[in-house]
Length: 404
Image (cartoon, rainbow, N blue to C red):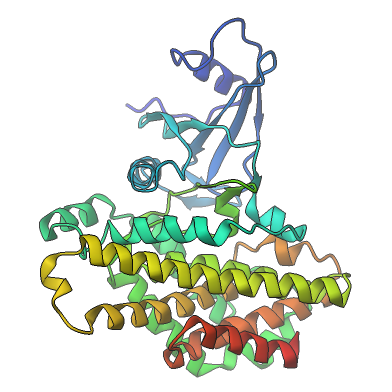
């Protein structure tokens, strides 16, 4: 019989006290539940005397905002296992795990409160000049070294089996690729946006077809071990380093889903400035920074991925003329298309983003959401025409001149 129970703040303190070596000396522990998502409890536990801290992340057995929606607690295993792999591949670009407790469905991990969640920094207009270099390293190493390009085929298939994550994949399949494209019950819609959805967006049959093609790719293309939810709310950052966290959606899927999630969330921030009271000078400058960052992310990622391929791919693949170029071209198209789906769902679906929802005036928010939807639509419907990231940047600029 399972002893699982959701912890309270006081129980979280007692739990970490029982972990030998985690805190030393005379300790005065305080606990605060800080989770702002729908799937987990997150406790920040600090020692008042030393300012040392840890995080407990515990899986709930239901969705917070829909208690009748049950969830498996096994996702903690996926997160813990994926972080261990990512840590090894990226030399610590993820939080350190101190303990994984299968029965209580929790992990105790490094406290990163000295850093900021990247989404909050972007909303404040902060620039992170090292981010493209850092995230391109994370993406290139995690996606290459968990793929068939590098792994023994049998080992790869065993890894695919280990990371079969059906419940969280179903959430993505529904909330990213299905529900936003019709008047689904799960959608959370700004009333000022609804006329655009009813009159235009939900009638775009070509868009819905292309999104469904991308959904099939998400469901069937076991290309690499992907983070599965790599948005700017899943990255701690400062001016020196990044830490990627919240890896519970990890599974073997299309590599472009992670690359696209990063790009798509930068596009959401790009669109959000349409609804904010800032000067044109600031808006134009910050948007240019975001586009340069997107361009640098892809170009650095591509260069690093090709370098890893040339160094460590199976020898037989190195002999196939043109295959690497073809692979990277398809990966670019996947990344932009899947990123477009991530952009659009945040305007309509169950879980929004603060970049847009922080705009209090609903009319201004709707204007920014429509802009984001048009950018996301172009990412999906024009992806097959792309030959470079510069092609995509030009598409964004053209839409901006008309809409933004």
